[in-house]
Image 1: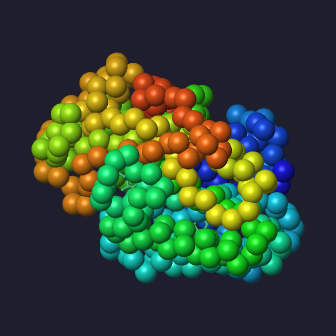
Image 2: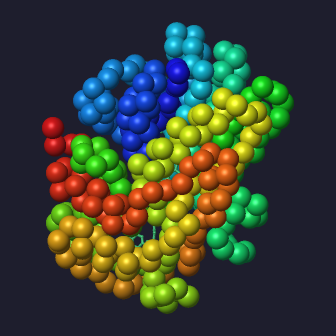
Image 3: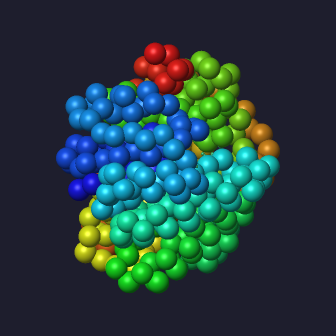
Length: 338
Ligand code: NAD
Ligand code: WQD
């Protein structure tokens, strides 16, 4: 099938791309490389031993999208492109609304011009906000606590209206919990710019010696050991969920939001231990104050994904830490080294 992948050079995009190519899909990557490297795409080509088209462009540019849709004529879109740093979104909310929300509107418009009716969108568990109950199921109230989260919420609503107005359209809103890990080859992985905001990239940079110690953001939460608990999901499992969602859009219309998590949680200190075991390195840490905006616990209800997509996570936190370490130890500076 012909699938256009926005943001396909990024962390989750590149892992999904690899699986799409292995399943013989015909793929085009549309990316402005604002947070990724063409090197990731080069490596995906090598790993899959398959070629695909790459178009450099911004999703806010409807003219460019129109041209690419005209040439490639995709049957479906997987829409990863967007900005994703929570802290930055507080500093630059308009940039987030422009790129994420306005960019998604341009994409949906151009899809309709070209009669492309199927979309899988990267949403986030961050749309839920403070937990009224756990695990979060898809009916949990939506109350995102920062501009980034609100862009995801608004895009979800826009896609829902788009699908309601265009009866043949089919949309899946995948609400990712905490994606971590890397392809087992160690050739592609997460490569954040600057000091990582997220736990696992931070831990792995401590283990490889790029950072001195981990700052644990609070040890006074109401959890097993006082540190924050999250539902970490292996990026390989997450990539597989996209293929299942694409299949789902072939036989369904309308719009469904679906959680992508494991249903199991790990605390910060449990992740530190698992990473030490996987890497054989020590990960020194210091307990510090809570980070603003953090919740104590986040856990996914996973039944809907299983029921609608026939998808279930298979990999555990040991697999996540092992694959992260493979990637980080073989590429201590990420994609920048060659
Ligand atoms: P990423 O930054 O690695 O990938 C995003 C890709 O989109 C990058 O290649 C970037 O260059 C590209 N891009 C950004 N703005 C663009 C634009 N205006 N036009 C064209 N390309 C653009 O991020 P990721 O971790 O792979 O996340 C992918 C998607 O999943 C994002 O939408 C993100 O919000 C969402 N998400 C990520 C997480 C996470 O923890 N990584 C969790 C939930 C949801
Ligand atoms: C996990 C746990 C921290 C870093 C974020 C976004 C969310 C989604 C996924 C996109 C928490 C603790 C972290 C550190 C720490 N992204 N921690 N020291 O906050 O659950 O979610 O990424 O949609 O929108 O908010 O993930 O990896 O930042 O934190 O102690 O240096 O690790 O307090 O308990 P989070 P995270």
